Length: 80
Image (cartoon, rainbow, N blue to C red):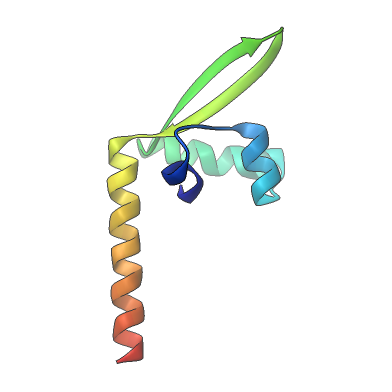
């Protein structure tokens, strides 16, 4: 999700390279995020090659921000 927070969309291969995940592992994570409504998937062909891109939804953006707030609160509590 953090990659999608700073990019409008990210393609499957870029995710794979940046995160160092296998195709299956990455696909599993992306499917979960899609199922939660946090990301949208766009499939197209470019010069006869399939290309899948992902973008965040408003729900996904809100959930990510709430997650960061929870982490910040946890860290603050742990350091007080």
